[in-house]
Length: 171
Image (cartoon, rainbow, N blue to C red; front, side, top):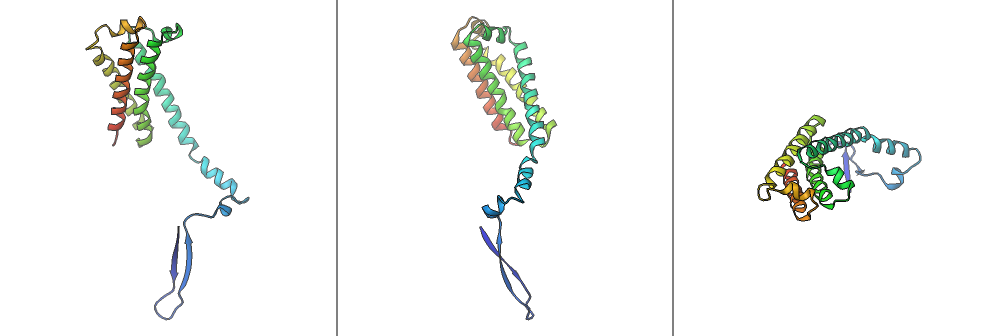
C-alpha cells in the first residue's frame, strides 16, 4: 500500500510529493546484499521459541507424571500391552491439557506466567478425572479392563474441559 509524504512550507518554499512504500518490493526483499539480514531477522525469535517450546515439553512431562500417578492403573503398561482404552483416555486427556497450555504460551507475559497457567490446566484435568468418576464409579477398573466406552467418556470429558479452560484464558 503506497502513500505520499509532503515536504515544504507555506512561505513560498517547495512542496515535494514523495511516495511512501510500507513494504519493500520483492526485488529489494530478496536482494543479495539484504538476504542475510532478512534471515537473521527471521531467526531473531528463535531463542524465545526454544524457551517456550522447552517449557511446554517440561509441562507435558510433568502433566503425564502427575496424571499417571493419580490413576490407579498404569497407562503406559496398558498401552504397551496394546489396550486401546488406556491409549484413548490418556491421549485425549493429554490433548485436554495441551489445549490450555497452547493458550498459555500464546498469551502469557513471560515464562513464569505460562508455567502458572500450565499448573492451573493440570489441576483442572485432575479435577475432571475425579468428577467423571461420579456417574461411572468403577471407571478406572473398566478402563484397565480394556472397555472403550468409559475410556472415551473420560478422554472426551478431559478434552472438553481443556478446551473450555483454554477459552477462559483470555487475560
